[in-house]
Each structure stands twice: as structure tokens, then as C-alpha cells.
Image 1: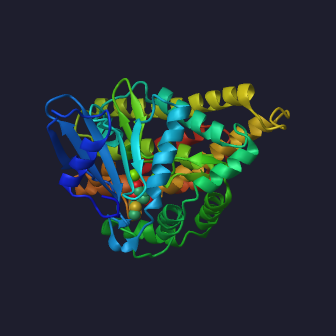
Image 2 (image 1 turned 90 degrees about the vertical axis):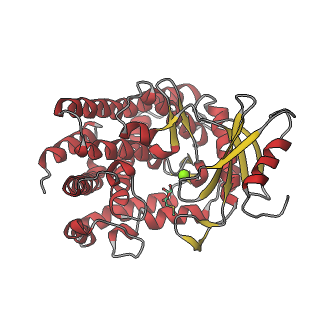
Length: 405
Ligand code: SR1
Ligand code: MG
């Protein structure tokens, strides 16, 4: 079964059966295709005679969300499996184990995380994840530090940059996050009720200037190996555990892009709580939990990244007085700017988030969408002046108090 083709259910079972030391001969394998993302096939394979199960993920040669008219390189499957393996070396408890990668079939076989829930779903259900900030700040600090020029040999890093050149997937981001939402592009997808606010964004020259600067950074800054798509749909959680999946967008880019993705998606859930069906008190309490998680994520990341720097930096100028503080301030500013871009793209661009899209009341959904645009725009416009993470929280809370439909 060597030449590339999308696998059938039977073929997925056959492949799973042939993996050495995984399922035994008495196994009775069952399979379901469960891919609900935008790009790939995902097979869930279980043995009904034992508790064993695996995930087989196969890249399609086009973007599933659009169809064959949007071709995509199968090399992203290699990038995803190599990024997962690298992340496993740096944070073994925070990513699934990769059992096998097959370049011909563009397929990765990995640990099944069915005992976890996709974080976006968990947040929409109103669950709390008390260890998430600790875990994700570990993931961000370790993956970003040790793949940067601060944390790895600078010649080795250049080889690694080559390994993770990912033009097709970067182009998706360049278009869908840093270009299309700011013009009347065909890929845009928004609620007709907010057209006035969208047209205002299309005409907003000061905003476009800031987006151009962030886009330039995404295009040119090979600061560290990024996950590249670190939203809450790429994170599995339980109360005790966090697992980052799906790094097919991995490439060497600006660190703030990954940090901003986490911040933006927590903020999108906060914004989506406009639809809260429980008591006002319960909504306020859940929003407080999200604010605490946002604060803890940034502050723990900041502390951990600085600690890694103090202990492990290999750059000969790393100890220059003042360098670390300026570096961290730049990271904060980048993270806030990228978070703003991500909030806007998830509101009016091609791919949305269920946190807002599933709000059934039209007026409430419209209010949430307007709030998202207000927050995203404010974050982008101020990002180069920010000196404290409080600016992110203040923007979110003030805008929430102010937006009326
Ligand atoms: C065509 S792919 C649309 C989006 O899905 C992925 O999760 C990325 O966020 C991408 O931008
Ligand atoms: Mg994905």
C-alpha cells in the first residue's frame, strides 16, 4: 500500500494491524473517520477485545474545508510528525506519542487522546481546567526557548529552519489572517448584520498599517519553531492533563504568534460567553476564571522563559544587561498584536470558532461578533505601546462593558 491515495476504512485497519507490538493477533479492530478539522482525514481505531486504541491521521492533497481547488502539499504530514517528535523531546507530557510516520501515505499514527476533550468544546460547556495555564506556559516557554537562537546552537538552528520550511501552510496564514479580513476578499465569511463594522475595518488605514507590520514579522522573523496554529481546537485537555496536537502549520516564525493564538482563543471564548444561558453570577464567575487563566498563562510564560534564559542561554550576548527585559517586552507586544489579528480573522474570515458561531440567538451572536471586532482592533492598534499584560485584560473587560447593538 505504498502509492499515495486517501485511505479507506478497511485500509486504515490493515495498516494499524501491521504495526509491530501494538495490537495482538486476537484483536478485533473497529474504525471511524472522525476528522472534523479543515484539512485532514482522522481515523480512530480501537480494539474491542482490549482497551487499546490509536489515531491515524492522513493529510489530503487539498484543503478539505474548500475542496480540490485549493491544493496543499502532503509534506505538511512530515512537518507535523517531526514537530510532534521534537515537542515530545522538550515537553514529553504535553504532546501525544508518535508511533509511526509514513511519508508515502502522508500519514502519522499516534497516541489516542479520547480520554481528553478538545479544549474549545470544554470551554463552551463551561468546564474549568485548573492546570492549563501551568501546562501551556511550560509548552510555550520550552518549545520557543529551545528552538530559538537563545536556546540552541545557531548553526544547528539554521539546519532546523530548513527542515521546517512550510510554504503552503504559511500561505494559508498569510492570506487568511494577515490579508483577506482587511479587504473585500472572496474567502471572507461574516454575518450580514455586521457588514457596517466589517466595512469600517476595510477602510481603517491606521489598523492596516499595524497589520502590515505584524504580517511582515510573520513573513520574515525566524525566531523559533512555532506550532503555527495553537488555537483551543489544537489542544486536548482534562482537569489534570493538557496535550497539544496538530502542528502541521509548524515553521520558524515569531514567538508571539503562538502565544497570541492561545490568548486570542481564550478571549474568543470570553466573548462568546455573551450567550450564557445560566445565571449572570455564573457567567461573571466563568469570565473571571478565563481572565485568571489569561493572566496566569502570560505571567507563568514570562517567568519560565526568563528562567530558561538565565540557566540555558547559548547566545554569547544573552547576559547583556537590559537585553532580556527588552526581549520580553517585544514578545508581549507581538503576542498582543497577533492575538488581535486572530480574533478578527475568526470573526470575519474563512474559518470561525464555535465559541461564537454556535450562539443561537441572532442578536446575541451579533453582539459577540461586534465585541470581537472591537477587541481585536483595539489590541492591534495599541500593541506597539503596551508595557504590561494588564493592557490585554483591560481591553477585553472595557470593550465587553461598552458594546451595545
Ligand atoms: C483552509 S484552513 C483554515 C484554517 O484552519 C486551520 O486550523 C488554520 O487555522 C487555518 O487558517
Ligand atoms: Mg489543525
